[in-house]
Image (tube, rainbow, N blue to C red; front, side, top):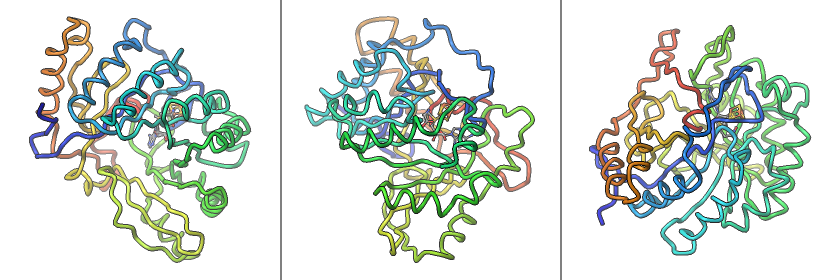
Length: 333
Ligand code: SAM
Ligand code: SF4
């Protein structure tokens, strides 16, 4: 069995799967307030998701991240997590993980741990209750904080993902870093991406460069760059005085494309081999056409064969060049 290798000789080891387009929050940079969600028949069923992921794992994927929308609002999603744990048991899958807004963690943290999940990412941009309600529109901070408590109590290692937003959480830089260090959680800042449609809100106004953020951090802390690479857009530093690790995800820079080992599948079974490109292929057709996996495998291989070298985001000319129209909730973060 030959593993998945793209035209630029990158082995595909990391799959992110969005299991739903729905969410119980309406973060302003991700969704509009009035979202029309997909009819159920468009979504891959849990059985189809199982078949899809199992095929990728058979073809060499070692890390599986479940995302959305909000993955933990999908009905019966724990059935899927439990099913995936068989690939952890066999050793084929090295890591099963999830990116969540944290709203359902109080309910599911123990089940996630039991299914073999050991690390999770929780998205949290602010520790201020009013600002949290403002940025997520429908989210409530205490619920998420209880979820994080439950996750840590269950034994899950928590990483916080915070979108860096100019004029919004700039003033919380040290509050966030201190809070994460105290709780022994890693923290990653994400540069806001020109995704979807924010109506009147201008993403260029919200853009806070992580270079600036890092410089602000260095004013107070002694930072050491870490060599660690995830095959993705994150770079890490060690905060020497607290021991904490802080990551920076700058998806707009091109400097990680050469090591990109990941692909994404949407909740409708479209495979995107590059977050910054529109190009995608359909895997739902082959999944639904026959119970045999040969067609699906051929479609996966064909899609990987089209993985582009890199992406086209560019803020440098003060216009959002390379803007792509789909929402993050569609492809998953
Ligand atoms: N609902 C889950 C959550 O919020 O963690 C998983 C899906 S969400 C789309 C995944 C990540 O994408 C979140 O960390 C979110 O902050 C990030 N995200 C959404 N829209 C973004 C944007 N326009 N720019 C940068 N990050 C974004
Ligand atoms: Fe929902 Fe996550 Fe998008 Fe926020 S970022 S609206 S929590 S999918």
